Image 1: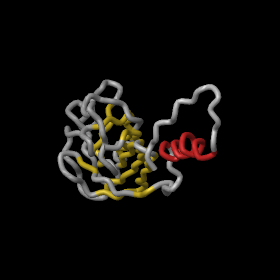
Image 2: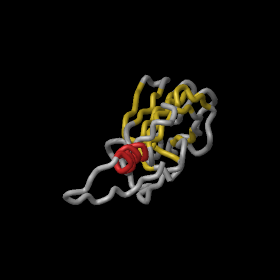
Image 3: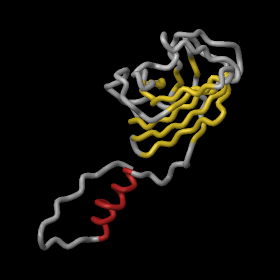
Length: 166
């Protein structure tokens, strides 16, 4: 359902059911669609210089109007990645963002280095319109030089984001 600009009411206007339905009910449905399923699962691509062998442990997303919410939890199942490269996860649907790559905070994330027993936390950012990455408190993407972690089985990556759909 598309948004319809509400009419401008003036003193003495008589409100009808049709006007109320169009101006209020239909516009609420445009902003908050109720005919969508709650969450949709997806399988993101996990990369660190190249696509990695992983399992989408719990990856799902939901769209309300032009707003997309995503939560992705991925477990490495294959060999090791290449250290000193950014760790990225694919988005379920393309983002409409003119600020890609400027560390626009979207939500939060973490990488669990199982062999070292260390968790690295940060916030997610759009790396491109189809991928997200984690940035730490030093404004550094997790996985790049200075953060030399190479993902290996059974390390995990969890990223959550809220962004505008393309």
